[in-house]
Length: 165
Image (cartoon, rainbow, N blue to C red; front, top):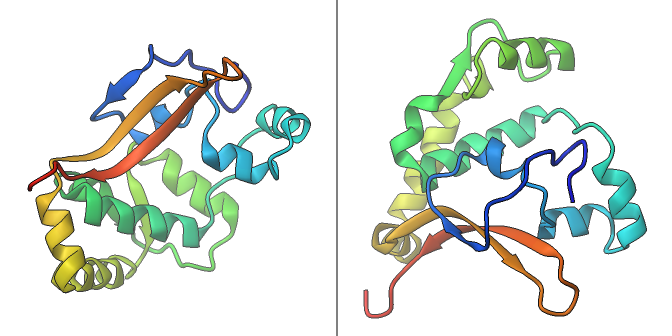
């Protein structure tokens, strides 16, 4: 199911660690987020998939940066502040800043400290910190075929903890 939003043929069914989020999001397979966006209606999903992606909002960028710092600490260097960029800057300034920094999660000037504080609070939270520390696999992408419909589906696992760990 290749569309404007999802132009890349997904890999065969399986689990794929280490796939960058921007590549995963382009795989031509249906995700829970897509179904949610379309309200569960396949006709609406088809229309939505054929539209260009909406640019991320500053709040979405903060969420992505937080997610990266918590679940992919090895990629912390990919989260960068953009000098002179404010949270309220127009969308075209955000788009230009992102285009100049491919593969980076960009934040407005001064935004990184609050994200790092949130990350530290999560790590310090007893059970959550322990769960994250015990994870043996993080941010793994999956592809599978729905037995009933034959549709290729995709998902992303935040963290996997092996039994007994």
